[in-house]
Image (cartoon, rainbow, N blue to C red; front, side, top):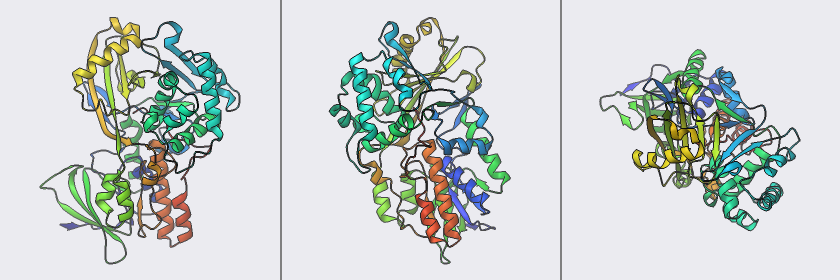
Length: 486
């Protein structure tokens, strides 16, 4: 075992969006930071890889204009111009098996103030009858003011059933909306969290739900820019280096044992190193936080161990020609929830590359690629008739088995990070209780909050540290979670 020559003020464990945000905040406050990441890249779950000359994202992520923390991170990384945000919410919803206008509708907001900005879009939502649309409007307005309780253990589906949202309304509207934002079906979605999201993304401000779409792969949006910026401001980045143990040391700080080798694939011959620091940020998934520091946070670790994860499957289809002009579309009445055109972002110069996202994919995550192909290609032909005459040049599958936590009823209690954590130890990640779901926006907010807690803690200001720990917990009208169908 070797020791580090220079002792950093803070070790940040995890190079996802939470870890990047924490390291950036700490370094800009003048702290010496070492960031340790088990993967050979930064960006965490938002990553890219090369296949046949194309740059492929492992999952498909959209965000909203109201994702202020995430958008601010993009600006600090210098890549804000690498995303396109709609001037006005404009979303196409497709329904396989339908015919005529009923199979395709366009949700476009008006310039009226919220909640009237979507009244016309709902009135023209032909996937539902006039009566069903009226019931949806009534349910939305009821939910806007309903006291569902921050710790209510009820599902969204139960509430919807009590408010006239029956099978067709579920299939044609609520199911895809819930999957896109919470990576869960309504019967497995926490009512209080779902209500908060609806209020802030749809009902608070007319511009909040305008959709942002990356125009470059995640390797160019997050990974490379983050590495460059963190390097410029003095952060020591240790990639392909796995944190194995975090323990208190004898001088009031911490010692972190790290091992060479990618996460989950430590190099048996790799050197084991001990890094000592005044403080540690655990910006890792819940299961890893439990393994690394559960002994120092036994009560919290017991709760975090109960957090379940929800998978996302992405199906990638490369056609020999263009089959749709839509940049992206939501899909109702199908396990598929999002289809997005990745042709330009991936670097394809002929034909069209569509990425198809299946969230809450427990049923599909272990299905063979051939079986998934047999199911999705006919679906795409029903959604995009021109696909029937096109040749499939390539088809492959990516699987994120632990894409997010399950946002199930009661999940907010399990996500809580205690105020009684040892001094100098903070936890970050989209899975923690921030008032947001486990998304890019939540991850950035948690990283910022963790860093500000440590900055105050290291300065000896207990009151400021406590306030920083609570900053960003709860969704406000000016910021809401990222819409995602990973």
